[in-house]
Image (cartoon, rainbow, N blue to C red; front, side, top):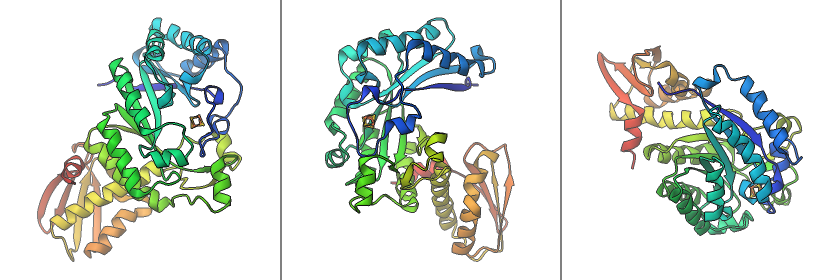
Length: 358
Ligand code: SF4
């Protein structure tokens, strides 16, 4: 069995970044705007570490989030990383992760990161469409992403890529195309962030002036579902869908507009599961059936049912089924179901289903 994974998050504010991407108010997102120092970081790590049960038996990662880590002054990078690396050298943690911009990656930067124990780099790609990048005032191009990925892979460092949905100038096709280009770069994992309009950003101004229209929640789920399935088909883990809301962000009402939902990942996965069930029911030519029983592993149950029983109600209506009963059967693997109807019984797997979608 693999070791349980723990992340010790360290939020680095705007210090590494002279840019002002239209959607970003980094100080708001990270929750503070003071420049951290070694002592502060060490105390933060200790505080988190103490909360981890049996830490030496766990896979623990120190993750520097926010800002653009490799844009920080070299001395500051070394100061912060040397603290994290001392925890790693002493065998107390396993990995060190940083996040940065594609145009802030070069060979000498990578040498430094490697020397200080960094083993994972997340790149904020956001889009692989140059027009979208320009409208979002990212200050880099898709070619910068390709170049950065090559350098990171040459240094054998794990690679995470972040993409956003619904940026200015983006369309359904452009977002799906970005996911396909990210797949071609073969990252170790990805994150998907629907664009939100956050207070005190240039996107807020554009929104108020009617120049930017955020995606609706419905549109976001439709795009995120396709993108998620694409990554799943290629065995690329999607480690997050949606922004990590700090309490401050929510308490102050900083999300002005956009598809914010605390369970957006659940909604997206549930929509993909609805497609899976619909495909099975169509394939089995189920129509006007009185009673159907679905057996599923407990871990798949809530995705099958959907929010407010949405998936079950949809299937009942679409296929004219009077009753669908769901039974937990933990002998089944994750994302497998057995369907029983009209004295027949068949086993299906979500993973097989997604591989059959063109
Ligand atoms: S590069 Fe990152 S930190 Fe800098 S403004 Fe853009 S999103 Fe914010």
